[in-house]
Image (cartoon, rainbow, N blue to C red; front, top):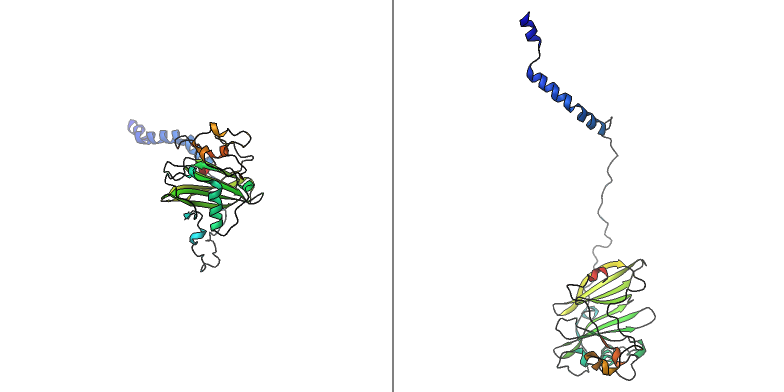
Length: 266
């Protein structure tokens, strides 16, 4: 009798297994609740992904000619050499008129020319000349001049709608409107390998009005007298110019360590 009762008791390993299953039962129930009763369901056939259809793939544009490159360096003829290498020694309107005339154009009226700005864009420690001409109420032309081997040289010419022109850490940033009024196109130029070439092209939020610069250009009404102006004021200005000699400014921008990124519309 004792022998049969001993045999009817389950083994200890079986009891351990039952205890383990009992402990796992709540967890298995939770896992079962996460799955659908009917199992995975099909959402239908996946949409076919096709590559874009190229139209006229056998055609491609010819590379731009040198005169079509806005950053192509072009010596301005008819101007004296500049041994000191600084555009502060040149007459801005004389430089502009000589450059436009050499290309077969008509020099603009002085009142259409914005105040010149002197700023080192070529990283040689000497100021270059930045000028803008308003062609009509919307379109403008931007020209940048530098002294290269004592010769006054145009290093950039752009025509477009100038929503903003900025300087940041050696970069020249041009902001132009897009078809979407919420955004502007931001073109970033910097001196690289002997030319003022394109560095970056991005989109940024439109700013209306344009965020004031930390170093605003003085207006003719509030400009200081020539006697109180530092070296940039020594730039001669013709009597017909619409801006006084003191309005030819030397742009001062934050150092690269503190300047914000141009691609973000700084």
